[in-house]
Amino acid sequence: MRYIYIVLIKAHTGLGSIARKFTHYPYTHIAVCLDKSLTDYISFSRRYHYYPFEAGFTHEYRDYYAFGEHWDYGVKVFRLPVENDAYADILTFIKDRESGGYLFNVYSMATMPLIGGFRIAGAENCMSFTAQVIEKSRAVSLAKPYWRYSIKDIDELLMKYQYFQGKISKRPCDRHDEYMQKFCMKRYLRGMGKLLIPLTKRLFTKRI
Image 1: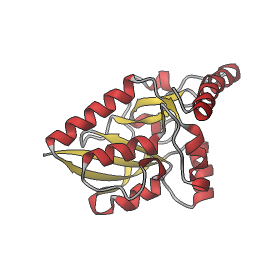
Image 2: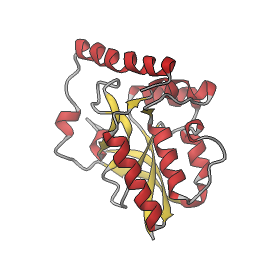
Image 3: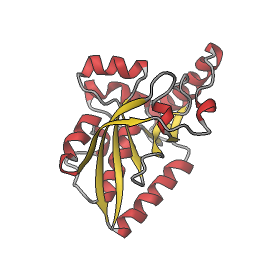
Image 4: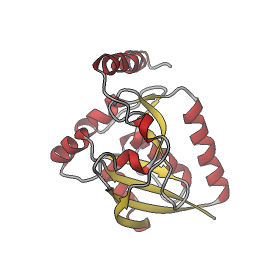
């Protein structure tokens, strides 16, 4: 028997603050951890703090969430029991998403509160990625397609597996300076185009 950890995160970002005002729900990001140290968060997210469109499969660390003058961040953590064969399936799935050229499905993420999410070929976001990991864990059954699960839905789905709720403190890592690269408008717009153009193409062609 192994365990995986599903972590709901109250992000300090501007987009996170806007989402909380709109949804009246505290958690705005979700990730998977493979051990109880909760130091390596596996998800689909931005790869640099100031460049939300430079996004996709990523490993995140504590000081990505507790940056600048922030020393901690709010979380809710669920611990799921996983049999060895299911754990192997999860590792295979994670490796596939890491190496498979998947884009960040920002369209589904942005419209989730309004229409409940949708699939785009070869694209994931933090919710769809995590819901598939949960499904592969076999700890619970999904009552609807994985891409329709919001963070709040996952919170309710995993209620009986709650492990911790509170704040997690910053733990500096050597990748922090790279993650916090200074903002450049030209780079921001270039990153937007590099994501939205191929993502839109996949949306309409339904092909990678």
